[in-house]
Picture 1 (tube, rainbow, N blue to C red):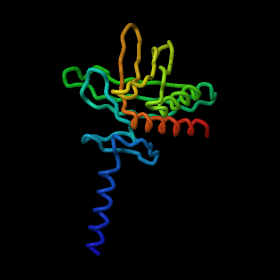
Picture 2: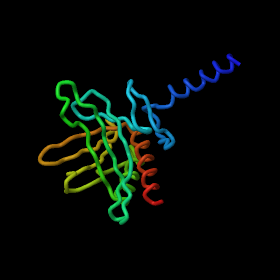
Picture 3: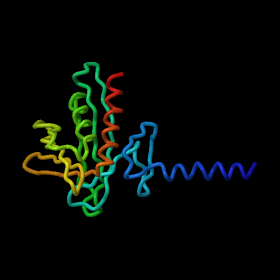
Picture 4: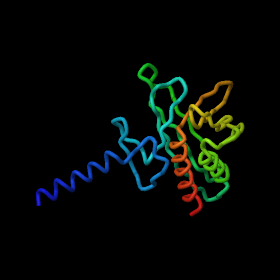
Length: 176
């Protein structure tokens, strides 16, 4: 009995350790929490890097369903922990997109290295201008321009495809 318990424990722990892979292209909606870099992350996140920072950040995708479907959004958040030298500074970004824009973004992310031209995610408004491009050396590049400043978030192509899966999962939640 004790041996069976040890073998079972080994398989459970092994599956938990191997559950998240930075190069995985597939989003798993059944994952509630992932331990990465010694910290808990929500869901099955995609890793990204913000220009000028060595730290790796992670995405989170959800949705906000409203009574009027026109007000419902799919929500994409880039979460990057603040540096010790400036803990109050927000380093991430967020997008709140209507379903049609979320679908178009998922399509562009799935295109990966075949994305031939810049994809406009949003134009104007309180979120600023967001675009998505493919850089052969860096991967998929989100750029936000707002109030004369720009911020760049870069994901590898596999991470971008996983992010597309997360967007599609949230879009399905909006459609229910």
